[in-house]
Length: 281
Image 1 (spheres, one colour):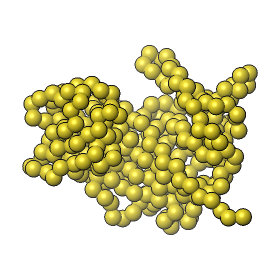
Image 2 (tube, rainbow, N blue to C red):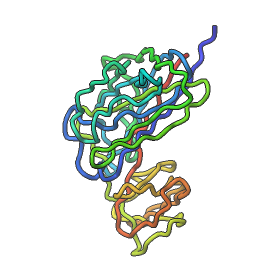
Image 3 (cartoon, one colour):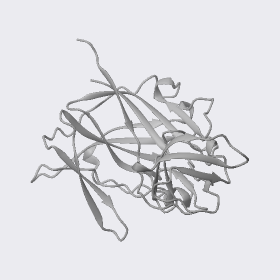
């Protein structure tokens, strides 16, 4: 029987106002709570994790962090799938997890997992290239809940302690797993890149002038960017050469929130950490 391999990309969303507040100052601070991803139905073997970690305003950082993997929480009456209980907001100490029965695996990105040569504004870590205690691979079998439901319910925490539910369809033949990240060091995703030229940008504007910090050191083509009030601006499709501190970003606004963009606002990553999960099934 031939082995089959596949890779899943996971991009947890983190709001800009949280990224702007403070660095992740201590161990056990939440980086992102449960984020869903799909895998083929049944048990799958996780072989490797590669993480692309954004820098601190263009300066690469090599901080360790932990990942927890979980299966869906199942309503015993209806059989409906939900995300595990949230662990708290970014930069807050992870809350006690009463939904521990959903956790099915854990892994750690060590400081030594990062490549010595950092890219501009970004660091790459891969467990498959490590000489740390986690060895050459993770070799972890992850098994989803096995529900036959065609969708799951993603419960979001919103201000005031309320929650908002989103129904998400599952690709036929697939199931849902969840991953959450917890810091083991002072990660900082702050940005001083700001919009420029003393003008506002209409919802359809595709060229965003930036200054203060060379955006080439902070962002790459393909990054989704947001402003400080968490409005998603769009996806970067091109970045101009720097003139002083001035850089033009060409942005696909169709994937954004379609709002006007003011002058002099900070621009942030929407997904400062991206995970590439390599599986065998």
